Image 1 (cartoon, rainbow, N blue to C red):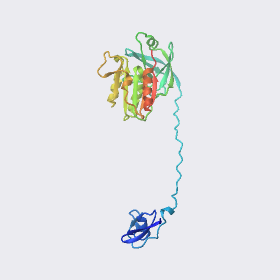
Image 2: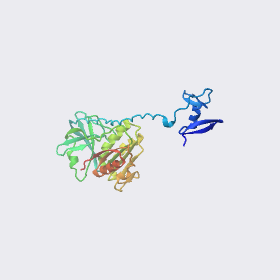
Image 3: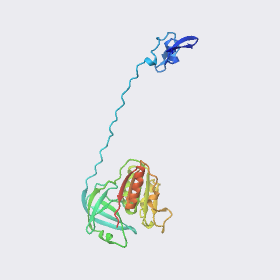
Length: 310
């Protein structure tokens, strides 16, 4: 079979090699000639001068140059932020008051301020008690002095030994910061979940986030076994006033549950989590464990914090 054939263009016979397009054949025979395009690029068009003789066929053209693919670069790993070294402080208990039937507020005034971030924990040592790992927070109205450490502790009215050991004037030793559940600015939506006095770290993180990142999306869930133990309403009112609309209150027991309190369990009301979410959960082992599972399933970052029980 011949490697050439004839093609009639504008009444003239043009010889075409196998593999050439009609446009290439017309250019080679001088039927049309390249002209300058708008940006200087060659464009086919009519011209008086014939074009150069036939261009080499496709089968005879040199292979296109193959550029080497870029080598994969190693991932850049940012160094882990080093936690602040724990320091020790001494002080005394200056205030103890009831927050609810099963929660008390204890204020320890130290001789010198501790370098703490919201969500950090400290170890509180008081004579007569085992050391407690607690998270300093704010009073429910948002107040606290620089040299004050405010704690929310569970309280059993039938076993008042803890409250008796934390009487005003009792000497206290503090060591901190400890733990890695502190507030980290940046990231996606902030999901704050607390059970009982686990509201202490959630309150400190939420208030800091409203000042540091006022535009950051946030959802707050607080729960208690008894509706009477939802002592954090003044703090939640402040969050609502600053623009946080997604605040959910949950109680396990139905006795005297106000209309704005939903029935438990608390984890049933956690919104669908996203990969970009940052979750802080504080409370009992059952609540913390369940939220950790939900966060792991969604691929969200989770910072758990267990609250000591009475």
